[in-house]
Length: 67
Length: 195
Image 1: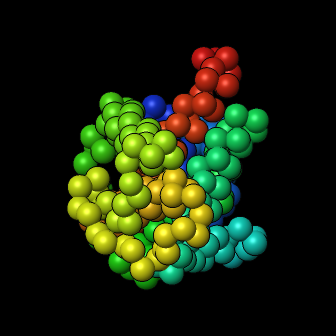
Image 2: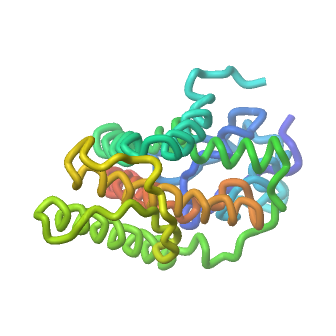
């Protein structure tokens, strides 16, 4: 079953430092070719750890139903 | 728990680097590794493996900020990670770097003499003479060491300040090396990004 929430990374603001990939408990985030963070939505559990640590504040937690 | 890699301990290297500069300034040259490796990886690998996994400074900020709780964990102002500030800071930093290389050149040409000082934040001069005995190497080699160590220490101080006030790795959001390598990666991957 999918979680209620998931993380979304703004590729325009991401500085691709990679700290989100380190804190993610599900290994759901990767840095696409050094350009920006990409969240695998189906793996994300919406815990918000990446949002809390992101220095550029480019990650937001979204509701799945809202889309 | 995630699997630990050997490179997860590179924060120790960061401490060793700054410690060595207190004993012998010539060790400052080792800092060039942290300048060249990310660029080489970005150009040939097309990724930010350095920032993501190898950067000892970033790891140190994570260690101090997250593990040792030395960070307020507050959101940094948005302009700090905006494009104009990132590129502006990179240009400023590179200008200061070129200025430092030019000073080295002047010493090499004999137009100016070796100054055994560390310049913090591009303004504050701190006597650092105990780390070097004149005549050990060419004056310009020593001059570059003092200049380069100044840059490294300056950026570390700025990084520590923003680590305390904002998120642990706030420095990464405007680190000139990070901006540069990300720009290289974006140029390399521009076709895939457009899709």
